[in-house]
Image 1: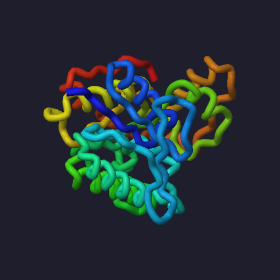
Image 2: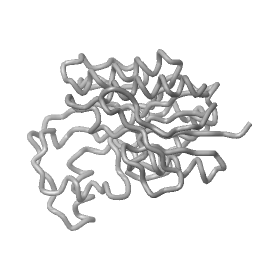
Image 3: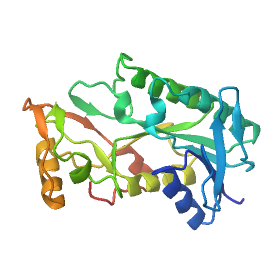
Length: 253
């Protein structure tokens, strides 16, 4: 059967995933709020009353990679997600994969696997993240909880340069490279029946923030950040489970 994929939110993460699927012979439609020049491009936007879109692929897998900025309090992220799930159902989707965040987990020290304690939903962002996951799972979908993203245009030595961070220099880094996320997406889609409903995607190395950012800033020739404290903190995201699908982390963070 011909493999098909609709990527909702074809931005910095979604577009490379769409391109990877297309290179592997999938039929792909990749949506943005405003259509893009790419031949894969389609529009999908919620205008406040309903979805405006020109998505037409039936029996496709769906990947929701709407950017985290969409989860701000004033956004209509959940409304858009719900309408997108309804559209995917109407088009008889094969399955729906949500890019979520390891921000759903509690802030306390510990090693967090997919059964880790979720954060008390004090913050609007965490509430939206958790509601989005529950919504997708209720449709029989699956969830990838992504650690902090690095990759082209998101070089830690640039985006962190000279900043006063609220975190401790002795916290552990939980990051993943965009190209590994794209591979993880393809692993879940191609092993859909066997795949669990939730996977963490986080590189296996967890250096101290101070060491990590100093090294990246030295490489980029930028000013390293300062930290609010030097308190020892060990909150580690375990991203090992997805390796059961034959996936392995290939890219340095």
